[in-house]
Image 1: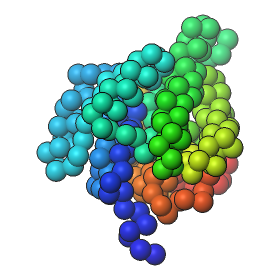
Image 2: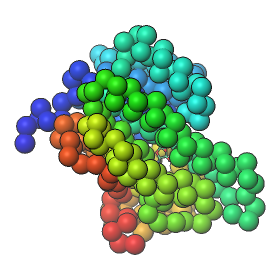
Image 3: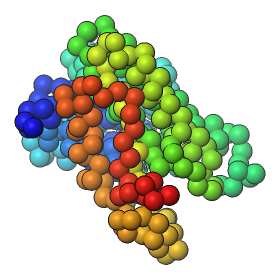
Image 4: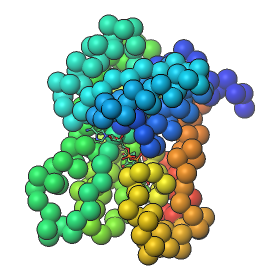
Length: 256
Ligand SMILES: NC(=O)c1ccc[n+]([C@@H]2O[C@H](COP(=O)([O-])OP(=O)(O)OC[C@H]3O[C@@H](n4cnc5c(N)ncnc54)[C@H](O)[C@@H]3O)[C@@H](O)[C@H]2O)c1
């Protein structure tokens, strides 16, 4: 297989929620494969530093701050990117939040915030990207970020589980509508990965032991271990793959 199949030179990729964590790892990985990357985050104070880190490595990187749950902010961000000739070929819907609380104690507002950030955002941002990809007629790639909870439930994370389960079927819905325009929409389902989102869990001895005991790989995943799948799903190597979710979980689901 030729390395050219995975080459992203000449492509522009927008990664939401990429000022840190897995989003930053995806952005760096795509940039290393030749893409011009646009980092997004709601946390403006982190965003410019992350863009600078990529530029310091010689990559083409830009930053655009917006809240992925805000329809108007998303539309105006896409309009401003277009004015800068930054036309999105690859979109990774990565922005997400976790919120742990038993369901009987959960307030509707808390439920809604998790659903909006993890699921509705993928609809809002993908719609903005896909209508432009369709108009340009050059196809594109959309990668939604699911989770182990796209497939299996855990206690205290009901809205996250519902949202990530929704991501799996939203990915199929996007494939059903946009495949004819040469847009491939797929998803990645990361397992338990060492990021800031999981700091409390990593520091909790009982949880840390459970993660290692329940996973045949007997360890947490590292952010850089998600990059290969993101590059694959962004590249010509995946041009006939559509509506799939690839779990990058060390085998956790395989032994469930
Ligand atoms: N870390 C894991 O183990 C793991 C496992 C499965 C899935 N995931 C998913 O991967 C994605 C990234 O997770 P992470 O661990 O890197 O988390 P993280 O908290 O380190 O990073 C998420 C980023 O998204 C940004 N963000 C949050 N809300 C936003 C909004 N409304 N608009 C724009 N940006 C926003 C945050 O500011 C942050 O920089 C999430 O969708 C998460 O659900 C993570």
